[in-house]
Every structure is written in C-alpha cells, then in structure tokens.
Image (tube, rainbow, N blue to C red; front, top):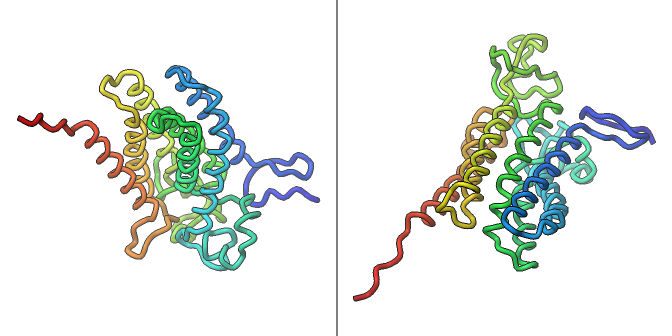
Length: 285
C-alpha cells in the first residue's frame, strides 16, 4: 500500500504517513505533561496521576477536536470542498473518521473533551478538582502555544493581507473567500497576518503569568488559575477569531469560536470575582 500524505506536509516510514502537524501536537502534549508533572511534584501530589490521566485526556481531546471540526461550517465550505466541515461530512460520513489524516481539529472541542475526562478522573480517584485544574492550566496554555505552530505547517489560521515584514505567504489551495481573487491578492507577492503566531505569543505570556501567580499569589485559592486561564485564553481567541477569513459564523455573522470565547472569559471573570469579593455574612446579634 503506497504512503499517502494528502495535503499535509510530512514524510513516510514505509507505508505509514508521518505528518509534521502530528509531531508538533505530540510534542506539545509531552511538554505540557512534563510541566504539569513538575507542578504536581511542587504541590506534593502523585506525579503518576498526571501521566496516567494524560493518556485519556489526549484521546478525549482528539475525539472532541475532531467532532468540533466535523460539525463546524467554516467560511468557504461547501458540499464539493473535501474535508471542509459539516457540508462535506454529512454526505461522506466515513471521512469523519478516516479523514483525520487530511487534517481537521478544533481546539475548543479538544478542551471540552479533555475537561470531561479530567472531571471523571478526579472523581474516580477522589482528587481535588480545583487543585488538579490549576496544575493543568499552565501546562494546557503552553501546549496550545506550541501546538499552534502546526498551523504554519498546514498554512492555517492566517488573517488579513499585510505588508508587515513577518507576514506569511499562503498557497492557492489554502486561500479562503476574497483571497482567492489572485488578481487582487497575487500568489507570489501577497502576505498575510500569521494569527497562529499572535495567539502562540499571547499564550506564552499567559503561561508566564500563570506560573508566577502559582508561586507568588498569596490570596490564591484552589481553582483560581484555571479561571485566569479561561479569561486569558478567552480574550486571546476573541481577538484572533475576529480576524479569521475562514471563521465558522452564526446567523448574525458572529464567529462561533468567538462566542464560545466570550462565554469562557465572562464565566471565568465572574467566578473569580465572586470568589474574591464576597464577604462572610455578619454575625447575628
């Protein structure tokens, strides 16, 4: 059987395709696991719980990410555009499973899938949910920062055209919407904002903030770091999604991921405020 890499860059080991995007994702997960292990050790937790749980979290994250992609309808998708969201998969259901080799993962689906497993895992082993979510928060955001570089390999997550020196070129097969007008946006000279780079940098800064807060914030309560992650990452994605030409939008034109991000940031901020502003009721006289 010949090795088929499809549209994704990579190499072959015999008949087995190995894609650079997959290597980056695995690397991100391992680095995240290592960071979570160090934090667990610092807090006196059993580090084996991290690695044992990571296996299930990664599997659930991939399943959730795939479901999010399959059910989405990015801009420019149609029934005749292969592997491009629900318009394609509803008529080619088998591709929803085997088509993962052609790309298609949604980060919010990964977060939701992973969170469900974490909830079940801490319940099964009677662990502190807040503490383990705080252990996961810095690891998660740095893994997302690393994983975003897979978008460079696949020419994904780019924004408007730009003349800035760090703009990136996008090939014909990966252009969306108006950017497929090659008279206005020539293939050889047009550059685009690397949104994946912006998100990655903001995530790295968020990682530093979370690590510092984990060690220096005296009023920190268990569960605070995951709430700050929700605020930070939510705002990050609100900005990024507003610039994507391929965003999956709702009827009113609002990107679906942006709506999820707004909800994430608002819930995180609301819970954080309630936890730190509320005061005990005065004693009865």
